[in-house]
Image 1 (tube, rainbow, N blue to C red):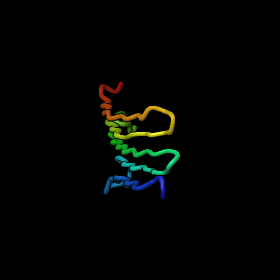
Image 2 (cartoon, rainbow, N blue to C red):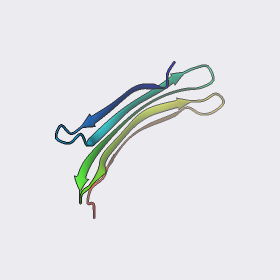
Image 3 (cartoon, rainbow, N blue to C red):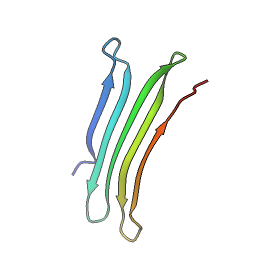
Length: 80
């Protein structure tokens, strides 16, 4: 019955800096249903921690609306 099924944070052993997060969200009810997995990875560039990759896999199903699904991967590079 919960929306957040899993939340995992990846930390650096050296300084406990967050290096990434994984989310799994889901809810299944008569009125609406959704299931979403999101993964975010960070890298250090120019003294900042920036997202290097985001992946998304999920679906939404709301009555009287068309079911929506998504699956994509975004890769960031060439930080200036």
